[in-house]
Image 1 (cartoon, rainbow, N blue to C red):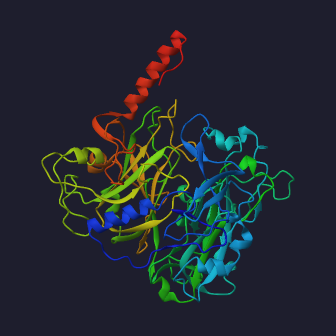
Image 2 (cartoon, helix red, strand yellow):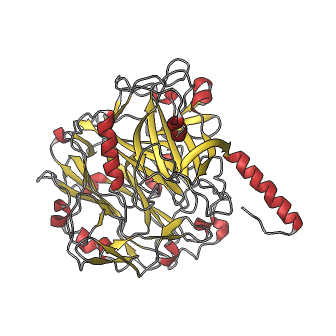
Image 3 (cartoon, rainbow, N blue to C red):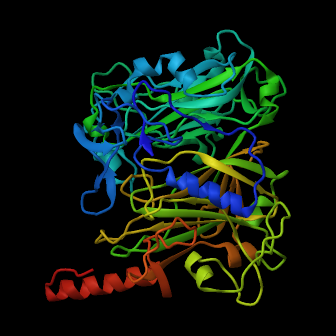
Length: 574
């Protein structure tokens, strides 16, 4: 894929009325989407920009203490040949023009970036307006016990700000949002969430101000735990989630969400109060920098533009709570999680998914999400959630590589609906954007997400958590019609998340036996490298051979080796 050039039109992910496709067509579509990934921001479409332009990108460099990639620093450059001659890409910011607020404010550029945007659509900007404080001044003892070092040292900063959307509508009663355009202020914006809150929400009231002391010389940001994942916050999901590399999204016809209006107008799904959450990496280097990160909501006055309300569903491990560490020194570690049928049975009606976005961190190499319809015993039936027959295969080398569960006699199968990675098996941490999807989640279905990691550059185990140096495994879907469930996936050993932060289903019976999480280390062989982008390719690009161990077994064995070497006074060999 070619780099985006500052000032040139951006290509949105247009989600206009996807046609139903067979399995082979969907595979081709996914392959094309995977081939489009590359430098961030990534833009498909075959457009070649003239040489001589400069664009800010986030090149992958080594994470300290690990071979896992992370973002490059300021003022580094990397040449890229687009076919029209080499283009010098500035890495880091400032002064990268990609994050220039003047250009972001140019609505003609903004409109050009979204082909198909209704001419009568109006921009509603929900943005920060803040000067980043010195995040290294806070005392470490002001953080809760167990807070990751990246937060305690000021390297990571999370800010939250409340907005009453009616205050932004210039007297308009209610509008229909038809497109969302991300406006990140820098390449150090790790993610943004737009949390939807109730009247009387404690989180909404708390974050009307950004700092504990607005007048002090050394401002201390108010601690912001993402409201939608906090019980009793009064916030019950997100209207939008931004990840690095995301492009504008135009919804299908008649699909959107409404903003504004009054609490007594009978529209329970309208978005009225929001909390914008922005997570910054390398915040200790941003002191004094002005930031206006946020989102642009393109909206019309036509209520028919939001006849079907768009919803956002987060599955797998929605808040990085998975208990098992990823053992270091391994090329192929696979963590599998589920959105169980015990949760989807609570859905009021089928969810039609039209876009997906994958989120993981620096060691992730491939992410697969599959859907299946279980029978009374929890075995995945031979058919997809739309009732189409899918020919399952008895257990084979292919199913072993893919990791699908099969009893060897039945023809049970999972249908892969999302595959995120690239031809070389790598996962681009800085290119995590919505891609086309076209499948239905029917009440009673199960969703399975497998995240594959390469920890061969690590000498220690990696925990799951919100810090960039930790890991995550998350899948986000855009769907319609909107329903109340926002989270479906792992919470702890006794229950699954199902609904909002206060919603759960117990991990019992079939859900416990068939749809619990598991973490495995796969043995691989360097004999036959895989050159395609098949969903069944192992994360390292190698051919899997029989032999798997649980992550707990590998981690325990490593601990024994470390202890023996420590007693002998030897270095640890991993």
